Image (cartoon, rainbow, N blue to C red; front, side):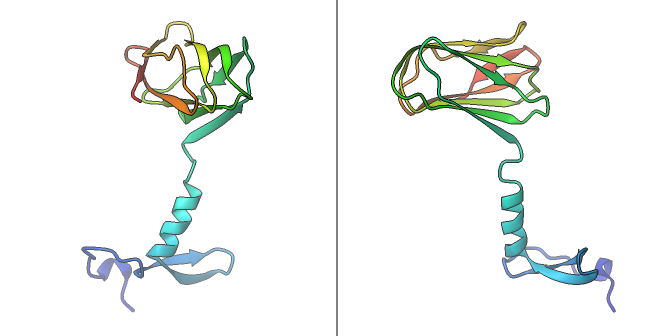
Length: 150
């Protein structure tokens, strides 16, 4: 029997190519196609690095966004019942270098205030947001700045 380290190297992959695996539940060696492995990995890793928060705020409220210390990117989805005259979004926690934050709103927020934890700033903070609008920032730990990238 040929050992795996004695096989020729592949120079490209196709969906039908197969890989060996050990089936822990059955205690047996099996094969898996690249397409099945890809499908499994896409499902398993779909939201591995993103945390989704939802809120349905009303005028005058503050929405606090907890930044995970894991470094997961954060998506704050705002779904108010209608246009909001004023809202504050406050980031809390200690962000990790290159961590990303996305803010979306299904409705218009006329006066939006964004605040960062002490010692941090938000460059390009939104002051208003249109219905179905968004903003996207990446954290620069060297300068303690959330930089708007979208």
